[in-house]
Amino acid sequence: MKSSRIPRATIQRLASYVQILETLSQEGEKVISSEGLARACGVNPSQIRKDLAYFGEFGVRGVGYYVQDLLTAIKQSLGIDRVWNVAMVGVGNLGRALLRHKILRKRGFMLVGAFDCDPFKIGEEVAGLEVYSSKRLQEMAGELNVEIGIITTPPKRAQRAANYLVEAGVKGIVNFAPVRIDVPENIAVEYVDFIHHLFSVAFNISLNLSKGLI
Amino acid sequence: MKSSRIPRATIQRLASYVQILETLSQEGEKVISSEGLARACGVNPSQIRKDLAYFGEFGVRGVGYYVQDLLTAIKQSLGIDRVWNVAMVGVGNLGRALLRHKILRKRGFMLVGAFDCDPFKIGEEVAGLEVYSSKRLQEMAGELNVEIGIITTPPKRAQRAANYLVEAGVKGIVNFAPVRIDVPENIAVEYVDFIHHLFSVAFNISLNLSKGLI
DNA sequence: TATAGATTGTTAAAAATTTCACGTAACACA
DNA sequence: TGTGTTACGTGAAATTTTTAACAATCTATA
Image (cartoon, each protein chain N blue to C red):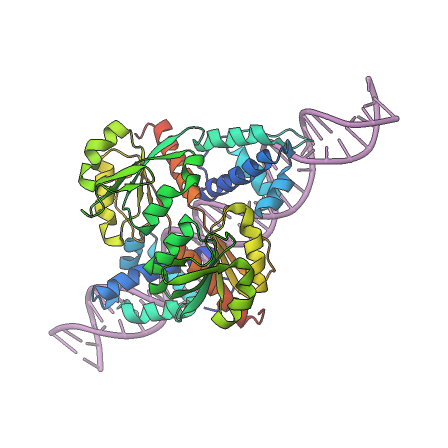
């Protein structure tokens, strides 16, 4: 199928297929059917076949999908078959945790710079990276070849951080601060806010309570 | 409108309305229109009116919504007009960051217990909480009155953590580990995986590149 | 080489969600 | 009190997303 506009939900799901396929691959599984994959990530088998169809034909009829091949194909489709250089703005609790988290690097996102505007933090070393003044972002981003920015500042500083990142030439931003940011249209932005998920759970618990399920 | 089944997306959006209304409230704004709110969170005004209609009529025609009233109403609808007690299983980098984050408490989620299975971590104190053995979850959850569990273990230990939490009687789980967990149907589960968002940004950057937008 | 069994890719139907459009209600002000 | 203006609530239309159904095709085996 042609890659007409691809639903955002499809992209989200592809990301979880990657997780599962990577596990399967490590466990030495060679082949997986859409049904098997579907069970593993709690969706409908047709959904999976349709999602994949946006990008090409990766399976073999009567057989299923070769785990390694499919993994490679999805990664290629998502553009994560390579390493992306990432800079972080805001070295608070959350920032530190992300800097120390191995998962980012393991998934191909290499933290190459850490920035903060707090003079007390500047010069500090976190997870092998020196913390620089946010004002030096533009100057340093070029030589570090930063492509993606992660914002982990307090909400009030998020827009400024975004401005710095855009000036520094990043092409995408993942914003952990709970505010919208304004950036040019050709900059890809994603918002991460785990409080939403807590709200969601609280709501569903309340719902279950009112339905007498608990 | 009657509260027929409420779309998950609606709940997600309500959560962001809360964020914005709280800011507006702090800034002393008294009234906001669906259009103003829509602009602030990047959605369609009708969307907002429809979302709210699932829970009741909170606005005044010709005027808009009284910020404080709407905030109260949404919080009540979501079941976040009270404090929820939360236990965390897995005190790694991410767990620590969450424990130290003020935002959880500020939003009404009180961390009342921290658990880990690593003997080196047990007994340690993080953000004013002593870390206990995960095995003691069931025993302690009762007296701590834990209602929600947060899983921040490595993926392989997530299912075990979930089992402990369910045995301990929690009614909802927020899982930060990148794996599905199996729990009884009446337990509300939410998955948080920020790697997905990085994937998404990477994909959109690749897309923009191929469209010649960059 | 033919047949049986399995599982994909794809089209069509169904369901869910979003957007539009407009009647209705509230306020401001003459 | 009447009139104009604003902006909500809601039913219907449009769009998007998900699910179902099935023809196509691959492997295995006799």
